[in-house]
Length: 187
Image (cartoon, rainbow, N blue to C red; front, side):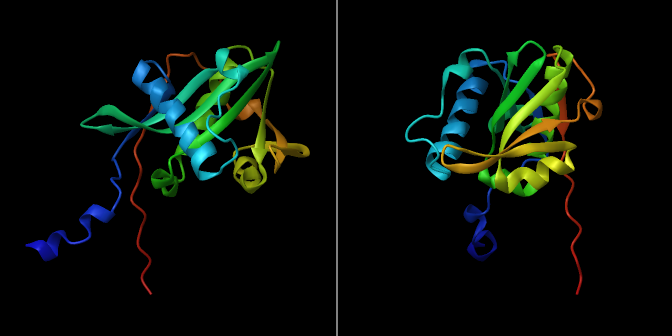
């Protein structure tokens, strides 16, 4: 019996569904900040102890949470949006927990929720400063680079979303994301 269970503890839990929505509860906001700290402070070491800044006071936090028995259980994705000037919105601090990056859709769905929410709130432009290694990913999602820059000592691009690809919606949207198993390749 032990041989059957050998190695089970080493495998991360992969849920069958996720929700993507604006953070609504205290535990969702706490998980949102904890994930950002894990990614930007511990993993990437962009910031020393905390990545919070003045934008957090006005930003709208958006999360992706994995579900257990159909209920959101743990925050595994985060992004924030804010209106930088009338009609111009910005997204920042996009983070996905390392164990859930293989899915490949969580980051894209967070971006879609961010831009569509801002569009619904009156955005005429949506911008983000994107780490260089993620520029191609954003281009696939209908963003264009406005130019390269250095931010926090790292190469970034200032990028703009094509709002025509992101239909406007209200702040009460919740999207359910169900990962599809990858087909195995046979040699």
